[in-house]
Length: 65
Image 1 (spheres, rainbow, N blue to C red):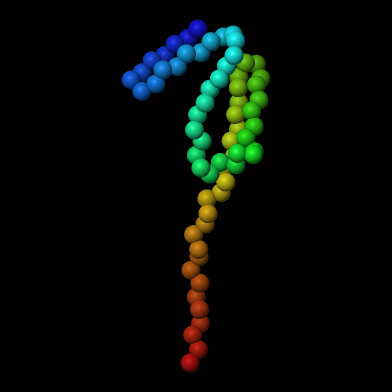
Image 2: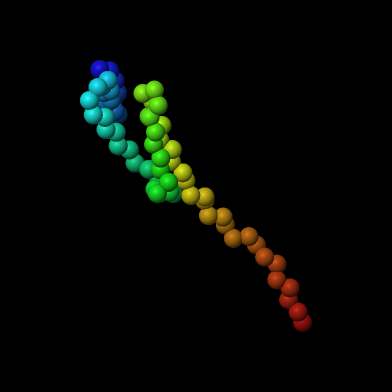
């Protein structure tokens, strides 16, 4: 068992039994594409983000007359 403390957080990791960790994701995450895998005791979570919307590009309009 490993324990770490700070004024802002407290973490304990256990080497056996159930493991649960929760965290908040930003709003631009593709929730349906989240993947997780475990290999050699290392949990890897892959989170895809949606592309940032591009601002509209200026367009020149020709005025006749």
